[in-house]
Amino acid sequence: MRPFTIVFLVAAASGMFFSGFSTWDFVTHLDRDVHDVHCSFIPGVLESDSSASSGCHVTLMSPYSSVFRAAIWGGIPIALGGLAVFSFLLFRGLDLALNRREDDKRATTFLLLATLLPVLTSLGMGYLSMVQLGAACKLCIGIYISSVVAFGAAFGIRAQGVGEDMDGFGREFGLSFAEGVGFVLVPALLYAALAPDYSKYVGTCGTLLKPEDTNQVLLPIGQQVSGKTTIEVFDPLCPACKGFEGRLAASGMAGELKRSALMFPLDNTCNWMVSNTLHPGACMVSEAVLCADAKADNVIVWAFEHQDELRAAAAKNPDAAKDLVTGAFPELKACIGSPAVKSRLNKSLRFAVANQLPVLTPQLYVENTKLCDADTDLGLDYALSRLLSNGATKETP
Image (cartoon, rainbow, N blue to C red; front, side, top):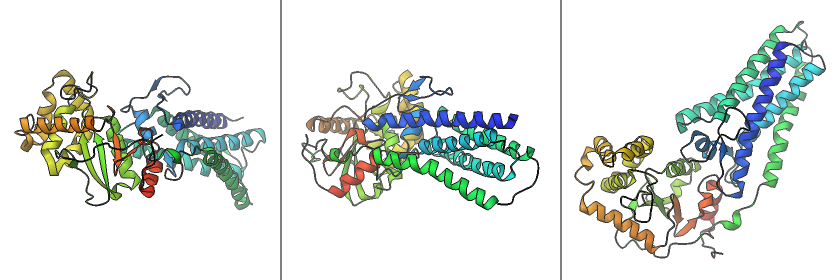
């Protein structure tokens, strides 16, 4: 067995392990509960993290981690496709080695072409991770490296071959391509067939008890002025809220919603329902959002982009969040901290109390019917599309 063949087999096996554990992380969330995710360059090592701000969690919960989300709860994970592709590459590599086909130009040419799929996919997913999500997943990086190494090794295998007999390459390509499609299609179909049906939960997680906004605490957000009336229970420094907004935008369903935000900072400097501050500075930034009023979206987008900086600064100095916000939005300086905005924020919290809302963000109510908390991440497309189409509230079990 030649050195490049050995490198190729190791790269394909590594890609299988990395994508396999990534698939496992995804599958564990199909019980609609919260779980740790693997965050290690060594597949299987339980260096795990379930925090909403970790790169591993951000990428897993992102809209790019799976496909067909509206049809299947959570969708079919991209990592499952990666596992299938690397399995196929390992199969083809073993075929070369065991059947002594390392000099077969037809087989080695196809092998090189086949490795382009994971390389190009890695380039695309890497771009989305760094540019769109601003997060890096160690398992994903392992997959990217495995893809590049496999491509380089396949190039070496092809270059070291002898002879130029390419007769029958079309047939070789067709048969091998069909094998590859089978490797990918069969597990995807099995996954889709075995995926749980959670449609029975849609609309069963409760309704608002007193939805009337008598104190005018609900703040219009988004660009849509018509559609299903929707209330988001919202903390501008909540990583889960940031992730939720990204998933909602990617779902394409935001255009069907007339959205309002109920400010609910998980910060005990203003929220008496929180015993320990989870998001330092959230009260101050929430005041800024309320002060911005019609331009609240600008403050929200800015707060999402600077969440880590705002929380870290406020943890050291409670006034630091105000300095950062007013530095970006000087026109809000006179309003932030004023009795009027403090009263409005307090009334927002009173609205939550009147409706017996759990101390949790984000929450979404579509025409007063709650989207189940378990459906705000991987199940968003699946559950929200059904909630919108059902248009009726089911009885809460």
